[in-house]
Image (cartoon, rainbow, N blue to C red; front, side, top):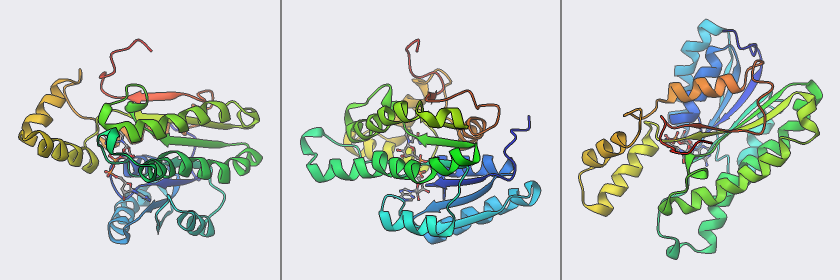
Length: 263
Ligand code: NAD
């Protein structure tokens, strides 16, 4: 299926690896031009080189910008490179797990900055231009923990629920009649460095072997496996498509069936 977005420009954040990279790759394969952002220059450069292989087939342009997207300076540097994005995929590292008794105001501010206020700033900076041009797609990578919060990931679900509430309103603003959609994509367990680090930390806390924890986690998912970044990217690309123009203000869960509820 031709998604009808060839030649559009996408900003994909947190895209040197993992889910962000999966989104960037799927968009490049659709002929979308991408500007990818992550903090470390070397890994980001390598990611851009991998995307350039796909871009040879699709005719896309791949740019990269090594910045911390959660800072104002980082966002300014990105927008100095390019301003008029048709697609924005917001994403940054998730807050660390822990016990809520230990979280101080500074921990909450950091989580809110990364996982709520950064997407908000990126949305604010880009949606009016999208509306003027009559097409726009915002995809926020959030987490299944928004629907089914996990005790130890309270900083993550707290901040991301704030973003989810904001997006639910903004998506239904006047922008909706001008071709702009905003949706959140909620990953369950996807096989990325972040997931591996989470299980390693859990293994250290519990004293159990990491292989055992990982196997048990897989067995608790109806699909009996973790998702792949490529699968995640394909969903993202579809939500960015012309065909998805009537999907707006939604929280799309991709978790192999792990969430047990009806809705
Ligand atoms: P990952 O660690 O594999 O990749 C994260 C990417 O974001 C990397 O490219 C990293 O360099 C970049 N990044 C991190 N902080 C950044 C910053 N401040 N500025 C710019 N780039 C930054 O992680 P992932 O598994 O791809 O997860 C992506 C997001 O999805 C995270 O917020 C994570 O909490 C969330 N999530 C992931 C899963 C999962 O199973 N993988 C599940 C639920 C939620």
